[in-house]
Length: 406
Image (tube, rainbow, N blue to C red):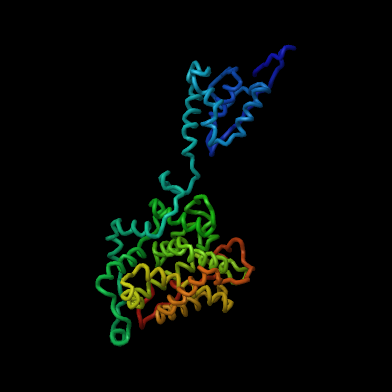
């Protein structure tokens, strides 16, 4: 209970209890600020409830509440109130005041929860493809490298035919780079690794245009075309390489436009397909082509492996989108489309890469579009469990040229 004398007699007030929060925390700061402005501190107990100030003081408090929280620390009146020399110094430093000071000092460090622990200096920062790749070049991947099979084992006539008519072998100096690609494909997604989390966050922000971090698990990943709330469950056969490929696609300005167009196509009301899941299957095709030495000629020509693999991934995804759009494919055609795409990719990798070059050159001039005037797409992709999607890993194994990567 509290009373205020206005000259005509005492008026009985009612007890008010407010719960003020900043970023999900109790704002003991506002309680202390209100009492400082009132100048009539009568603390009955150390609790969340406090006695409201007079009308004049309440208006002053409301004025402060209209100021953005980030500007309060530099406000001159507030500085005067919190400086002992200027006339406000609590006689007894109560538990409530101490808690309020701690909360106030922590205001600048309040962050949105992202579903994993990330350091404050890295939170919200995009990561480039080269930075993510450097992470894998510096960490110990020996346990994963033991699992790779760099080339397909062939026997009998298949081995003889490949020796006589197949592509050339990869130069010795490039094999370590090839093995790194295949090793990354053996690595899973680790939500406790800050670099892994930043890769996911960057993919999400670039594809959606969001400026804020998102949870590493949640329904928003289904909207981008993963089958469930956890992207890690969809990386079978491609590992973290699938996410690096998506990162490569979104971190270049020209391929980002292509990725956004394919994403819009995936949300077409009739031709819808799971975008990220389709990308994972493209990565599986790339891995298989690399193991079958279909990219060796181009890698030898450029004296590089990773740039060739990245461009081949983008070129294959571009060709799939072109076929999907022009031939009016639907989700029920996914298995057949991917099977034919793999045959073409292994047979004519140079043709696909040349098509990508032409497309990107036209994109830079604003002359190329996958979707054209097509307008019938959803703002959000349907959940993948509503679709019957047949991916590369769902197709039957082949016996002549090798086996599917599991």
